[in-house]
Amino acid sequence: QVQLVESGGGLVQAGGSLRLSCAASGSISSINTMGWYRQGPGKQRELVATFTRGGGTDYADSVKGRFSISRDTNKNTVYLQMNSLKPEDTAVYYCNADWGTFTRLFSWGQGTQVTVSS
Image 1 (spheres, rainbow, N blue to C red):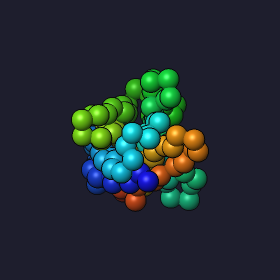
Image 2: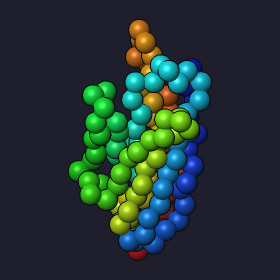
Image 3: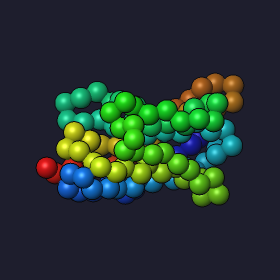
């Protein structure tokens, strides 16, 4: 099993910045990729940023140039640095892990609320 705990959400004014953290525990060695998703009010959950299996990164078009995903392998933690925040970035942000050796499995964190005021 892989457990994920997010932190770092909050209320920020438009143009501001926040950094989200996602700490992983459990079967760390079985993790293939990790990423961030979000779900805004009345919207479906969508990909924000992720590490790819090839070792690169991928971003939603709406956040390119403003958000950056990074990781600290020593701390088993993935970060999402969010700059130039907009009201439309308001959502619950979820950390996701793709893990498993012979079977592809997914774990989600509990989510952290990000609210951007105009």
